[in-house]
Image (cartoon, rainbow, N blue to C red; front, side, top):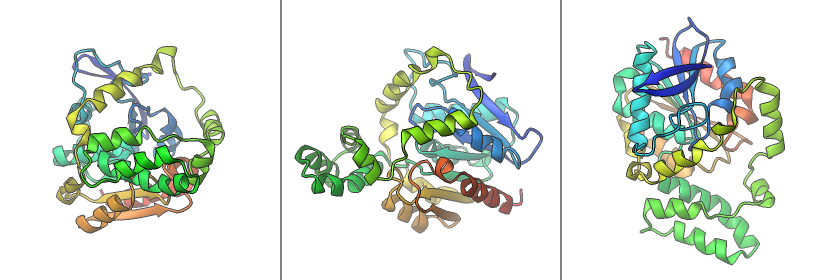
Length: 300
């Protein structure tokens, strides 16, 4: 197991394709998940590029967040930059999934000279618009089933004057079940677990790994900058940008996709049809090929 020390904090990372160029840094989502589930893709991309994949500070195999630490979005972004310096990488390409897509965007906006390009994988760029995308996707199901309480929650999320934090918190109260999962094309957990078991031989996971994410999420959800709208940042990114989004993804909805298409002069969108939020799991070969073609086209 490899760690990099950032100001006394141990950050777990994995490295593939050592000696190859350019470098991709995978930034996982959750919030509070892990890079564990991305191992297969990191290995495949490592056949072409140098890949760094890591557990964010406060989750899984990295050190737990210290009690008095304010671990907001900016804090995690700064750790990514310190990792780049510590690992002696001149520039790299952030590849952010879900919440990791927010970190990838803010990182590239904050440290533009540290990136060659940016890849967003079903990103969360705005807590408000993600909440609304989830509400819009689930509303027809609850209307059909006449689930009054859930309909009221969703209508509140879609109100024009709701705050981003209120909208996000209400979206967390949407009640999911197997039927709703199927309606929204959410993957079956049994298939996902089979994928993990087949593709990750030695996860190096100890019992204490699982509980860390609770503190991570609470710190993040208590942070003001988690609820910022980062969509305007997209227009400021001067390096090439790739958006990969599943047809049924509820994190990066139509509003965000249209904003990306309209406000970036150097952006490319790739939609993976018949896919939802975990396109790297649902269509692994297509996913790998999209990223490979994009990065090779940069001629770095």
